[in-house]
Length: 142
Image (tube, rainbow, N blue to C red; front, side, top):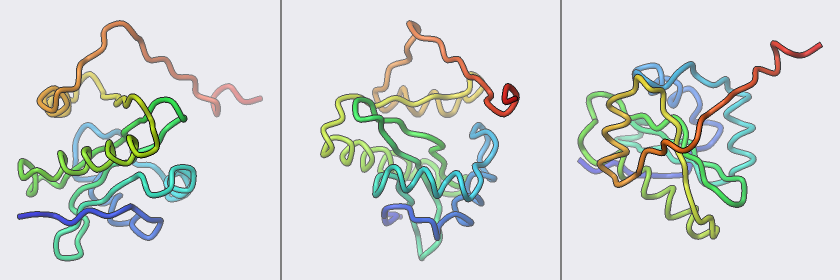
């Protein structure tokens, strides 16, 4: 079974959200507005995988002009281990390479063992020399 890949559009939001809701380790779903803003800032980079017009996989892809980032890679459970996630990632990496982006990163929750196994199997290395910090703007807004 070979899924067709294409660039994600705003119209895919409901289908993409449904995929995210079926997959553990993704975190809370992004809102429609958040996804639309992300896609407008990173045109033609994020990808969906479709079988018979059904979205079965998705990855958000963006960059800051130096480093690419992949977010929320997800494939519906019934379609895993068929090469869909690998194809999605490879397509994003190709597009980042065409934009002359020299490196790509991905962030995972520590508890996402399936994700860690996937990225390791693809040849990605876990970095122990950096720590991730976040700051909740809404909490600190005055």
